[in-house]
Length: 497
Ligand code: FAD
Image 1 (spheres, rainbow, N blue to C red):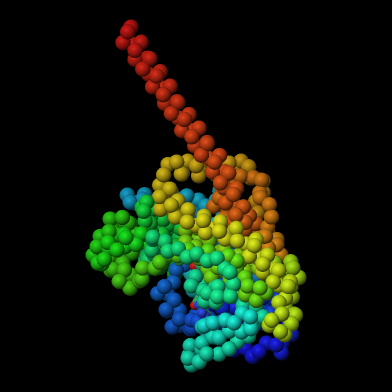
Image 2: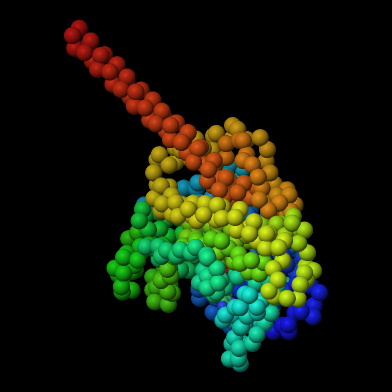
C-alpha cells in the first residue's frame, strides 16, 4: 500500500480493478511516467486456485480491431501476445433446427474477429502488474481512499492524484463519485439471462483432439426469442452461451425438462455436448443477469474517472463491451498526450485542482458520451438480429446488397497495423468515410470511425437498403404479375381458337 505520494515528484494514479480495462489503463499511465498502483479485490489470477475459480464463470470474448488497436497503442507486445493466443472467426455460422449450417461472413475481405479466453486476456495483461486489495470508500477531495486487505481483514489508507474506476458494472468508484457530484446514472436489467455450457473436444482418426464444429466461426443457433452461441477455445472445446428470457429459464426448473427442451431446439449441439455434460453444467452453472448501465459525466474534477464496464455496461450482442472499454483507455491516453499533460506533480495540496487535467477529463466526458450511448444502443439492437433476423430472407437480401454496395464503392483497404500507429495520438478520429461501409464493418473493423458516426451513417444506408428492398420486391411482384397475365392471355387464346 502506498505511502503518502506527496514525497514523489511524479503523480500517482490509483487504478481500481484489475480486469482487462484496469490493466490496460495501468500500463498506459506507467508508459506516461506516472506511479501506478492497482487495487484488485480478487486473488492473483496467476495462482492455480484463482484460475480454477475463474474457469467456473469464465466466458471467452470476441476481440475485434478496436480492442487490438487500443492494445497496440499502449503496448504492442501485449497486442502481439493476444493475437498469438487468439482463434480467428471469419463469420457467423447459423445452425437451423433441421441441422443445416450456413456461414454469413463478417466482411467481404475476410477480416475476422478473434476468440480469446477471458482468463488469458487478464493474465496476459497482469504479467505487467500486480494485485492489491478491495477498495471500500474514497475521499476524492482529500485524494485518499480506504482499501481492505482481504487476507488480514485490515483497512489501509492510500493516496492518489488520479483515481481510475475500472471496477466493472457494479463499480464502487462510480457509487462513491455519485455521492460528491451530479452524475446521471441509469441501470436496466434485461428480461433475458444467460448460462454457460461447455462443448468438449472430439477425438480425431489418430486419437488427437479435434474441434466438433468449424473452429473459425462464431456459431449461432437463432431460435427467435432465444439463442445459443459458441466460441472456440484453444483446447478445441467451445464455450457455449445460452441466452433466453428469464420466463423461459423459469420453465426449465428440472434437469429433465432442460435436457428435453435443449434437445428439441438444439439437436446437434445436444449431440456434441452430451446429456451428462449438459446436466452437469445446468446444475452447476448459474443463470446470470444481463445489465445495461449508462452514466454521464464520467469524471470528477481533475481526480477521478470511470472507464470500461464501470462507466457503461452493455449487453454482449455486438461483442464490443470489452473492445469499447479498451478503446476508452486509448482515447484517454491519447487525449492526455494531445493536451500535453505529463506525470509531473503540479501541487502537493489536494484542495488545489489542476485546471489542465480537469479540462482534459471534462473533454473526455463531453466527447466520449455520444459514442458510448451509440454502442450500448447498437448492442441492444444486435440481439434481435442474432436471434431472429439472420433467419429472415429480407435480412439476407439486404446484407447481400450491403456487401455489393460496399464492394462497388470501396476505395482503400486499411490494415490493422496502420490504425495502431495512426490512432495512438488521436483521441477522437474526426470525419466520416465517404464510401459505403456496412455497419458491422464500421463497428468491428474500423476503429477510425467512431461508434456514433457509424450509427449515423448506418441509419442513412439502412434507408437506402430499405428502398432497394421495396423496389426489388415490387419488381419481382410486377414481373410475376406480368407473367401471370401473359400466361392467362395465352390460355384464353388457345381456348377461343
Ligand atoms: P471487469 O472485467 O468486470 O473487471 C472489473 C474488475 O474490478 C474485476 O476484476 C473485479 O474483481 C474488480 N473489482 C470490482 N470491485 C472492486 C473493488 N471495490 N476493489 C477492487 N477491485 C474491484 N465484450 C467484448 O468485447 N466481446 C465479447 O465477445 C464479449 N462477450 C461477453 C459475453 C457476456 C456473456 C458478457 C456478460 C459480457 C461480454 N463482453 C464482451 C463484455 C466484457 O466482458 C466486459 O465489457 C469487460 O469484461 C469489461 O472489462 P472491465 O475491465 O471494465 O470490467
